[in-house]
Amino acid sequence: MNNSAWELEERHTILELWTSAVTKAPDTVFVHFLDGDKQHTYAQFDQLTNRLAHGLLAAGVAQGDRIATLLDNHVDSVALFIAASKVNAIYVPVNTANKGEFLRNPLANSGAKLLVAEDKYLSRVDAIRASLPELVNIYVRGDTASTGASVEGLVSLYSDNSAETNIRPKPADIAGIIYTGGTTGPSKGCALSQNYIANQALRTREMCDPRPGEVNWTCLPLFHLNALVVTILYSVVSNTTAAISPRFSLSRFWSEIEKSGASVASILGSMIPLIANQADSEAMHRCKGQLRMARGAPFPSELQEIWHKRFGVEIVGAHVYGFTEASFVSMLTYDEAVGAAPGSSGKLNDRDFEVMIVNDDFKEMPTGETGEVVVRPRRPNVMFEGYWGRPQETLDVLTGMWLHTGDIGKVDEDNYFYFVDRKKDYLRRRGENISSYEMETVFNQHPDIHEVAVHAVPSEFTEDDVKVTIVKEAGAALTEHELAHWAIENVPYYAVPRYIEFRDELPKNPVGRILKNQLRDDGCTQATWDMEQSDITYNKN
Image (cartoon, rainbow, N blue to C red; front, side):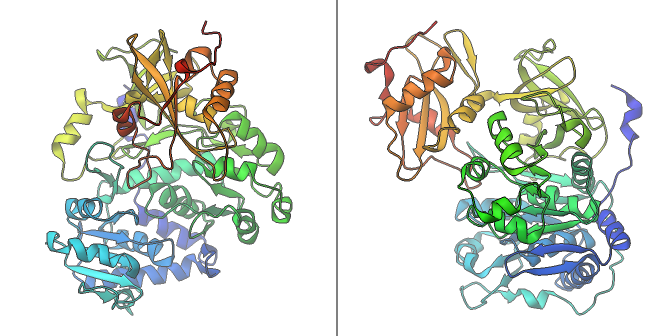
C-alpha cells in the first residue's frame, strides 16, 4: 500500500461544497420540484436553510445530535439535509414505509432527539413513542391535529434569522446515519462522515462530466443515499439543477423529462425495463436525444442497446460498484465509460480503496478468478465509520482489518471489476457455479415477469438445485411449461431451473429488498412446479 496516498486528496464537508456553489452560482436554480412546479435558486435555498438551521438551534439541537426525518420528496426534505450540516447535527432519513419495530429500531438506535414527519405517518410514531425516551421534539409537516402525539407544526421550526451560523463541521464529523436493509435481523445504521458524503458527490461529478445549465432528474426517495448524493449533492458540486419528482410514474416519465429539461436521469431496478418497453408517446419522441445519461442498475446489454437506439441516450448504466459502507469501490470517469468492458462495474477506485478478492481462507485469488470482495480505505473518511451503536457488528464485518462485503467478484488484468453475486446467494449445481444475479438479469427480460428471485434449494444429489420464484405481470397467462422452454433457450444448460413457483408477491424487507433467506427456508412448497416431474426434456450436457 502506498502510504503517500493517505493524504493524496483534500477532504471536504457538505457545508463547504454548498457554500462554494452558492458563491459561484447564486442565481442558478438549485432544485425544481415537479409536483407543484416550484423552483429555488442557490441563493434562495441558502436563505431558507439558514432560517431552518437557526430554528434547529433554537429547538435545542446541539452539534452531534441526531435529526430524524420521515418525509416524502419535497422542499423540506432537502432543506433539512443541508441545514443539518449548518448546525453540525447528524441527519437520519428513515424509510417512509417503516412501521412498528421497523420504525422504532432506527429512531431508538440513533437516539434521535428531533423528528420531522409527514402528518400521515404520525400515527405510527405515536404507537411507539413511549419506547423512545430520547425523542424530545416532533415537528409535523401538515395537520398537527391528525395524531395523539404531542407535536408542533414544521413551519414553526423556520426562524426569521437568515444569517449564516458560525458552526463549521470538520471532514471527520459524522454527517448522517443511513440504515441498511437487514435481511436476517434489525437494520444497521451506517455512520457516514462529512467527507464520505462529499467525496461520493465529487466522484459522481467525475463520472458525469456536468455541462453548464444542466438538469439532473430523479424520482428516487430522498431517504435513500442515491437521491441525496447522486442527484442533490452532485448538482451542488456541478452548480447545476436537481429536478425532483415525488415518485416514479411510468406514464409521466417522458413528460417529466421534457418539462424539467433534464439531460441526466437516475433510475433503478424495474424502472429500467418498464421505460424501455413502454409504448411510444409524443413526449418520448420529442425527448429523443435529450438525455445524455441514464444512470442506474441493473442495465444488461440488451436494455442498454434499447436506450441507446430508441431514446438516443449516450451513456447508459452506472459503471460503479459500491454499498453504503464503502462507495465507490469501482467507477469510471465519463470519458472512460465509452467503450468500457462489457459487464463490468468500472475499474477499481485505487485513489480511495484497496481491494482484494479472497477465498474462504482469506488467501488472495489470482487475477480473473472469483472470490469474496474485501476492502479497506487508502484515505481517511472515505469508508463508513462503523455501525451506529453496534460495536460488535462493526468488528464482525471488519475481520482482519478488512471490510468483508459478502459479495463475490473478480478483477481482470485491466483492473476492471465484475460483480458476480452475493456470497450467500451463489449456487453450485452439477459442478458449475451459478450467479443468481446474472440469472435474474436474464429472467427480468421476459415480458410476462414482473419480479423474480433465483435461489437454491437442496438437491438429493448434493450441491444445489435451482428454483425461480416469480411474480407475473398483471394479466399475464404465462405457464410453468412455457417458462421452462424459454429458460432452456436463454440460459446455460446447467443453470436451467428445476423448480418454478408463481406467487402474488415476494417477501421483502422495509426497503424493498427481496428476502432470499426466507425463500430458501421455504424451499419447495405445494405450489412449486418440478421440471423433473414434467414431460420436458433437454440436453443437460
